Length: 53
Image (cartoon, rainbow, N blue to C red; front, side, top):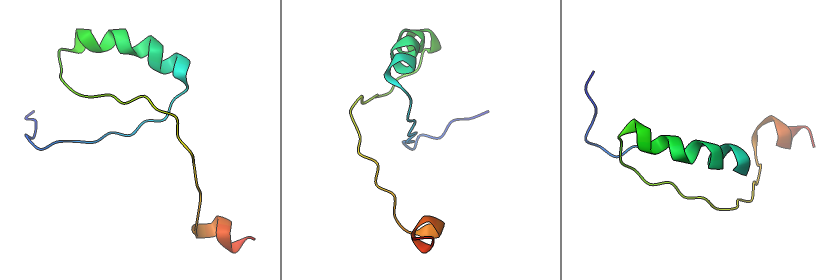
């Protein structure tokens, strides 16, 4: 398996407790990256939800 040298983005939305439990395990993976922890506002638009209104 080869890894691309291009940056990758992974967006995962989890509850804070799950994130805090997982963070210490990242050191064991031996990888490098960036994680941002921030509140979000979810806005849904378009699609089947809009047609049902």
